[in-house]
Image 1 (tube, rainbow, N blue to C red):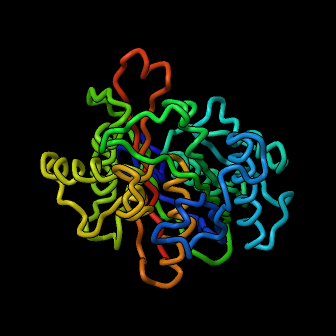
Image 2 (image 1 turned 135 degrees about the horizontal axis):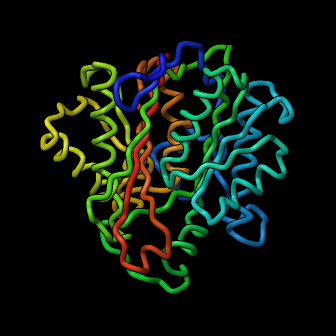
Image 3 (image 1 turned 180 degrees about the vertical axis):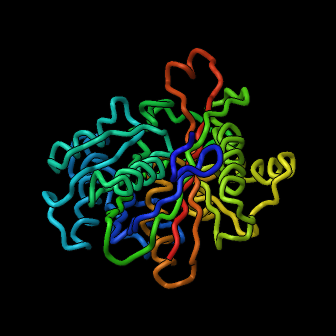
Length: 336
């Protein structure tokens, strides 16, 4: 028997208030030069933040973002009951090193670039279940640490195809509480892993688009919603290639596409910045949510938002072995 909060195959609804009381975003120089620079809390002056390595800069960036979000709610770090966070690096070193300095009880999450949404839905379940009252959800990525791990040393100057995406240097953190004022998480859909046989690590948008379609379809079906229920349906980091495929797959799946849908990876940068097919990385979705999107909600420009985090579940080892790229997409509904 399904639980009382379960709807359909993959979706849960939340009976208790799940309020996003504050949030913060920190981005790198290139991201700050994009169309949303004024909507982020902090733009890094460079990619090292005074540290010796990109990896250390990434954990410092995440720590700063969490502290900014807590400060906006008037909270000290010792008042946060749980930190749910993740990144792209092996063993989640950016998140775990930041958590060590923050001294907040920590659960590390990995969902590739869907991690921010995974953190939000996990935190919402924990609060709705009565286990916690105050949870921090966060995610980050750093362009140069990701390039070092997943692709080639930047010094090598490897030419990239047009389908490749720019891993965002960015972090986002949101404070989720059982009471207060702010946008509410009302439901969430946990995605299924979808593998359509795509193996090109320079075209992750094509690998992730089928997972995004599946999750959006199941969310609408499980809750018996029409596609125009949401003011905006936005995916995490499909990029231009993946977003175009998403539109095609809606038709093949017999799904009426949402009238207003876009992608954080497409939105984060503008055409002049020459970043390939768009942005990617855990921080892409996280900074867009905790910057422009939630700001638009507080201004009543968006009332109902469906955020669909997308992730390519590969590793350097599986890529070098020629394995296909399985993908995941999770969704959270945010209303204000």
